[in-house]
Image (cartoon, rainbow, N blue to C red; front, top):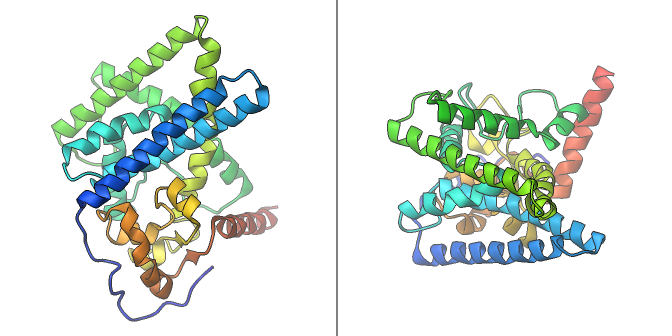
Length: 310
């Protein structure tokens, strides 16, 4: 829904805040929960009962998606007090979905800097400037082309031809990205090796099939951020969407539902964004109560565009 904007300046929305010991403990607790869920999903995925196994693989796909959202917090250095821990933890969080932490970080911070301009470039691409159609949504849901792009980046990292294509970055950052793609390649080689052994079925259940489930799940998490918002302004109160959501959706997306709050002060620990939502409801243009209400909005827009093009 569109909200009526309060012209008064938000009181706390743009205030900065550093990561505290309490914030770090909350993030470590999230990591512990994710680890437990991976173990539970893995146990269920390997069960002989097909329905139970499918449930386990879906759970693993959901946790892979959740881990990328935890990685997102590491990108902003708002999870730990010590800066060096963010990459140390962030790299493995992205491995199940083959996401390079440092490449994601460079592109994502550029997205924050240039949101609302022609230089904006999010790491997980869905062109919000194009009309929303059923075809575009289906293409985004099943965007396995990204995995091919990862393979291309791996080849470039070994050939010494990898270059950042969205501007200039330092040599140290470039080396980190190249090394991460090489690490991803070692994971893929290990998987390929296991696929020709007696462990092929286990690999499929524990990673390959969950990755197939995770791809559309991640798209649905990322979709609400800026789609159907004002794309020709740098005002975060107009070019970004927040969703109040439930405790479950806030946990699962790691606060990605509070996206206006995040763009207003991107270094604020995710667990503190909720206290800023009152300002968002008073001042922002695009605020939804729940994810179902947002997805209905998108499907209605896709239906309208389909009638026009049909």
